[in-house]
Length: 230
Image (cartoon, rainbow, N blue to C red):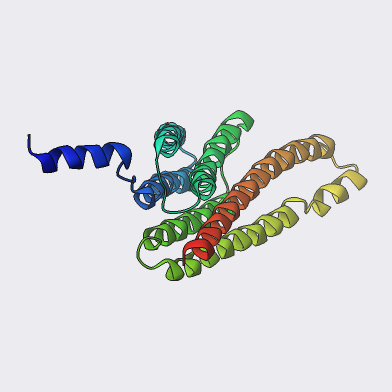
């Protein structure tokens, strides 16, 4: 073995090659985007077979997160603050976690997704793609990633608008109140069914609103990283 090879091995041992953390985070974001596409399909169809694919993809996302965490823990050096890498990995994954638990809620409550749910899912999916595009730019054009962080935050605000409008529509029950006042036959039963259905849907709406909050958290982490490295 040549002296140069020995020196190279020694240097590699003392100063290991730094993992491509930009690439790792991008891979994590790609997994979320693929999963959110399937999540949107579920919200548009209510097909539980598609919902089960969301669950499976969430598990794949957890495995990917664990792999990336292990790489981070063993890394000798990082291109940015370790805490920011950790936060990026976790907040991106949390979006997918909420997609999975939304599927579980819909199944448990035995309801069909409606148009507001589908619209919120599409907005969160769009925001996830903005995160992906932002993280793709960090290594070479970090300043440009700020626009993607802002777009992801805008998707969260748009989701909240849909959420509030859906709630307002959900709690419109003047026709049932009138029927109860007029003591129409079956009005009490119909009102009770409406109340139960309303609170079921309100629970799913709230969960999607929380998923959008996780999107905003992930966008804020992207913003913080841009400020640090740009």
